Length: 209
Picture 1 (cartoon, rainbow, N blue to C red):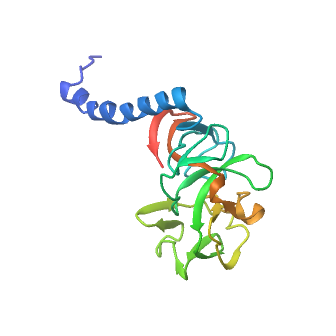
Picture 2 (cartoon, one colour; picture 1 turned 90 degrees about the vertical axis):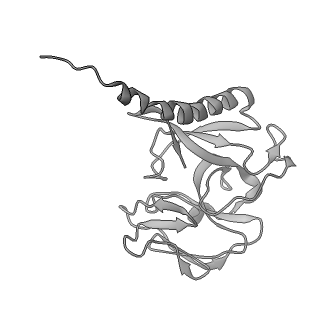
């Protein structure tokens, strides 16, 4: 059987990936190595509570400067970089036992929120896609939900106090989240999850969140 050599054009199409995505990965790895305490860190996903966005075993790059610069190993803020936004995937300290968790921030201070059958309403407006029902829209960001196990506990209509946030898992029927341990103080957010840089069965890559 004859083997054919791929045309040069096939190889050239790979260049943009390596120049763009690989450069981003290399930069994040450098940050993880040099300044992981204050600037960047990583998190290994322990469960399926964020499926399908995050899978068990995923390794996630976390931007520790997304919401400000802190004194290493403390909650003391040195520089305010911006406010957490609805739809951000965040790493935070659990109000229940201090464990570091990763969930989606779905509501912030001043929002009037309700959760019915796993689907969010903010300020009286549904976030879900009218056609599919399993996609929520946080501005321009589309979030795919896992409702295979139902929606989990509902959340009665309530207004989030200033300085607090509601976090939920994207796998609404299988997530120990804010419905169980309550609201999360914004100051307890360690950082924003930027991308999945390793996935079991697929290896290294760079999938932005």
